[in-house]
Amino acid sequence: MRDPDDDMVLECAVASGSQFIVTHNIEEAVILADRIIVLGRNPAHIHANIHTAADTTLELPARQLYNLVQSERDQLLMTI
Image (tube, rainbow, N blue to C red; front, side):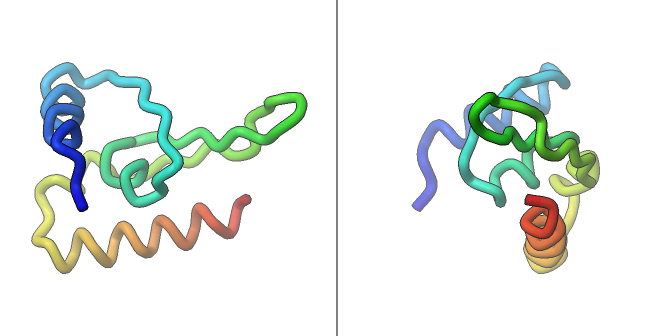
């Protein structure tokens, strides 16, 4: 189920071009971000720094978007 704030975040990200969003939702990160930083724990450190294809995701048909998100999600999970 989508949160009503999702649309607002998406609109802000597209309008301003620069956002810093903290999320635990991998699919959301892949769709919204052109760069994902995965933090390690104790002490916090950068575990992975991944560039995504977010600059094109908003223009893709639903099926292609789904496939891209799944592919990048799988790649991200392999790094952590």
